[in-house]
Length: 467
Image 1 (cartoon, rainbow, N blue to C red):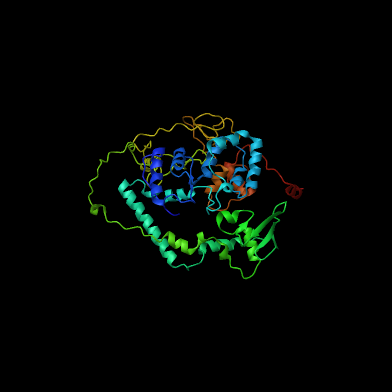
Image 2 (cartoon, rainbow, N blue to C red):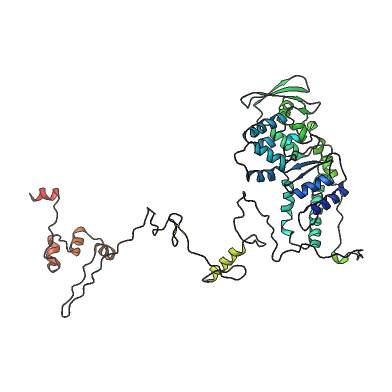
């Protein structure tokens, strides 16, 4: 990211963009090799055409696809079409799209007639970016200071850029002069791995045929080192050797890879980019008083009341933010904070940011559509996994008549096993339950035996013993 110019405008309209581009032209002039990539803002596109008529005007492919997906579906060939360096590769999928739908081609011609594909870029401009995400990096960089007043905001941005330039100037002083940037060389050396699908057929010391066997039909590309050209056109657009050039160079001995990289990636150009100094400034109280020949009035479009938003409004295809509501400085929702505070305080109903009570309606079942229960609840009549209520043990509620002694209630099997301090045998358990038992238990407590006790079932072993 190389910050070049920044401005403060009330809204993104064509007049404000025209003023900004006019000031930018005064700063950089009108260079012959200039490319400007804009988003889908029509006012910005018209301002660039008016101020820089000779510049190559490009359009962000990401913004184009966001508008494209709102109208059309099923055209996945747009991405390889935009990234193709060769025109033959570009027109082949475009012809298929044209045969499938004439409306798509008409829509692109009417609303997006700028350059959004690589094969249309000027090869002398060593920049193959099809998006303007680099501008979003700067927007995210200053996100935390956007709510400052204009004077403090301008001074803070100037301070951040001054520190950035000084940091990269110190990095440039430690780099060797006359060499290529180390980051670019690390990237190229990493690209030399995995080139086994390429076969090199040398024609001379500076030219060769590169056979690509990765596809069903073998492709041939011609590499000429002395002309710095490759038929895939990637080397011409980026200034960095493509995979065909790397396969040819690595097959030869004693060849320096840095001599095939464009001078744009040299240490000398890096030092020249950050050679100038951003002048430091004194405090606002020490600025000189200037009598302006005009009166500075209030802005035409006043800012709305309340906290200004810092996060951008996401599109319909991005899903929006996870937490809805107005965001505070820490990135949390005010409505969510109010609900948490009310819950922690023990209030019956939470309140929102304005202090009003938040009324929550009854929940709706997704299965039957009725209110008052969820989908997995047993109250839903269409839920097959209905939970059965546990049957409570039947209690003896019969009361004794006057003058009659009530008999103690008989203990259950679970109560005996729970309250017994030691081991309970089968015979003792049967005795306590009144189901009969051994001869010893019958002799010790005959009064507790029921009069109509059922005979105990005999097993086969006891039958044989009795017989």
